[in-house]
Amino acid sequence: MAEPKCPECNVEGIEHIVSKDSQERAKDQHAWFQVAYCDNCGHIYGVFAKHTIGSGKAGPQLVLNR
Ligand SMILES: [Zn+2]
Image (cartoon, rainbow, N blue to C red; front, side, top):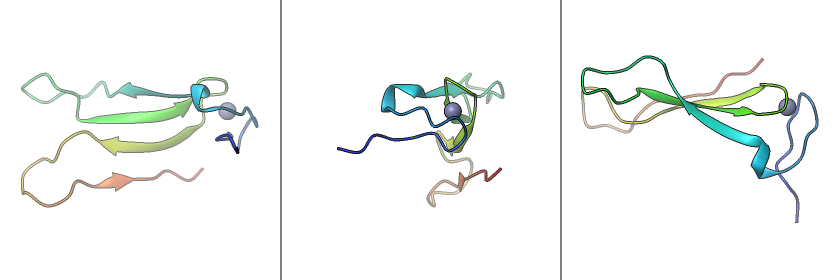
């Protein structure tokens, strides 16, 4: 079975994909978004909104391409 692979450093395995809460915090102390990144080289796979701000529509998903 194929393992997830980092495009930057070529490390393989889901265990190298880690996520961290943002430093930015809402008034309720919950982080606004999470960053998924490679724990080997720091390459960012994507930024995921943790919960919707404002309206009830689906939360935004930002994908960073570097
Ligand atoms: Zn990497």
